[in-house]
Image (cartoon, rainbow, N blue to C red; front, side):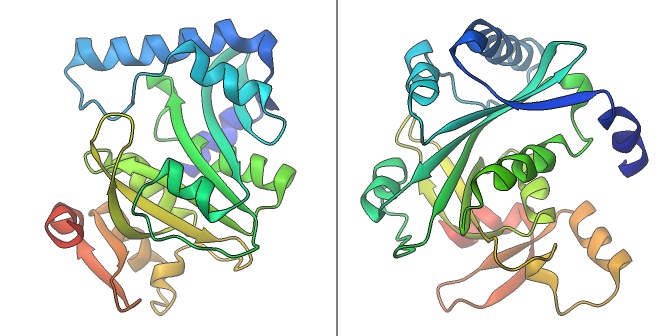
Length: 229
């Protein structure tokens, strides 16, 4: 997979989008939603109205990262710069996240065109925005049925801390957090020295979870919902 992405990455352009990209943003979002319906895929992407994206594009503290290939938008994600615990609580009620005065970037609404999934684009978008903003902490969310996104975040050093109910549609989502000042992948598996074993655990859907005692556990992903609900 790494070789496949490295080959195609030379053809990709990452950029911070603005209002001139609004039509492309809405088109990609709608196409992916339609594709999930037609293919009977799990509904892991929330339907967003035009004003949702306009608000982000008009806020100088927020970002929509776009990935282009041959001038075509093939992937995007939204980042919200949360400057207080109150802002985090509005986005994720009952999350119990308090980062004090640290800067926090909230990563959401990931859209990747079907033919480009599984290539690590999600992680590259995360890296691109982190270079721009240098957040102390990053928060990401993924519906429990979206294992590919969960694995992608875990490979970038996020850990699952709990589940919360989405304020948009009431769905149960995993809340993942990464300390960006710790420069390491597989943060939750650091005590395993064998890289092949780490890859194997993730590919077989074993993932990291931080329990209420702040202890890291390795569990089978199908058990996640039982444990964190």
